[in-house]
Amino acid sequence: MFKGNKLTRNFINLSDINKSQLTVILKRARDLKKYRQKKKSINTLKNINLAMIFEKPSTRTRVSFELAIKELGGRSVILDEASTHLSRGETISDTARVLSKYCNILMIRTTHHQKLLDYHKYSNLPVINGLSNVSHPCQILADIMAYNEKRGSIKNKSFVWMGDINNVLYSWIEAAKIFNFTLNICCPNIIKFPPAFIENIKISSKYIKISHNAMLASKNADCVITDTWFSMGKKPTRKLLQVFKPYQVNKKVMNLAKKSAVFMHCLPATRGNEVSSEVIDNEDSSIVWEEAENRLHVQKAILEWSLRKI
Image 1: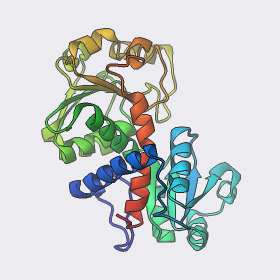
Image 2: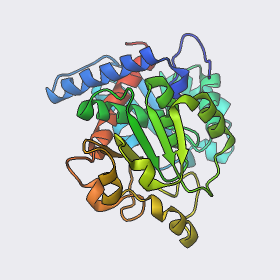
Image 3: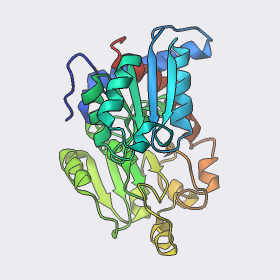
Image 4: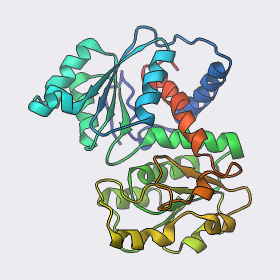
């Protein structure tokens, strides 16, 4: 568990935050969504400056955070690491100290999880993990919010993760223990779990199953989740495509799940690889667009929580 300055709240991994506080964030996100639907103005973060640092390209993270801070009355500064002095040798410690003079909070999308901790250490500002090579906690809260809206409580439900081992899955593993649901990780048996995953699975072992048969794993599931097969630096090859092919979420897989089951994907999706178009576009079961929308509302709540406004 990451322990930062007691006066700041960092949103780095779900396991750093207790269930009651995550529940507060989710409730606030639902309220903020209603306010937006009613076109009510909220200025809880008036004059707050958010710095966003991107090492990896982004659509949903960038747009949702930029709108989130703006709609709460604050401002954002977007920094592409390649176009700053970080790419020319300036240290994170120096950059963080400078940003602390201008800004109130940092959101970082990085290829190295340790950088999140370093930015907090040297800036003493709250840090939000917009995605790292280890985890993606903002996405999972948005996903849980979407499930709650469509199917109710996640407690005691059966979720299936289909495909590759990546940062989104890491946060789902943490969520299973926190929110008390079963997560069946169904992946090719040639895929090896990194050490951090093995430790995470041990901690959450009561709630985690591992299997390699997509048809058996999907049977009676409440939710089927997938993500791109080629993440965390993995390059697409013909061999890997063949390895992952049996783990595509298609109509056959969804028909084995419960009739009320939903499909999730954090996007962007490669149709025809990890998911078929008929599944992702199915208006009765696919909730991927609700997941994407909820990034905005959840991230508003995370910003408020990190700055102790809730």
